[in-house]
Image 1 (cartoon, rainbow, N blue to C red):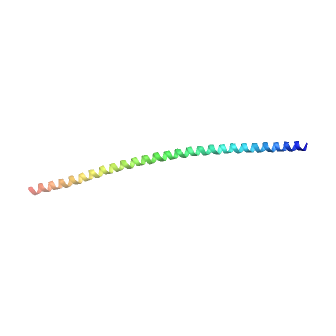
Image 2: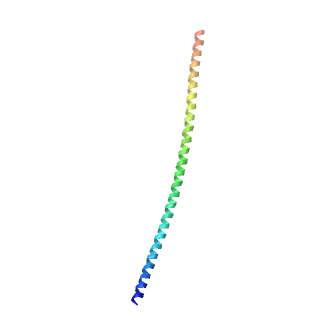
Image 3: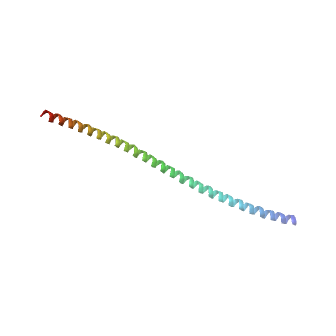
Length: 95
């Protein structure tokens, strides 16, 4: 009878250990799920940052093109001004 009582106690202990292990598994699954969600969120953030960098690069390239265009216009205005001033000077000297 003592052997039977020991077996019952051992069975109860094993059942409690099994329940604890099942709780651990559930907890690990929830942690894994949470981490997976975090990974997905971080990947989304990285994609948004990449999009932002791409847009900023496009803006920079566009601004550089506009700057070159404006420099070209300014140069042409200067050249035109000097040519005009020279032409006026020549006309004034001819009279």
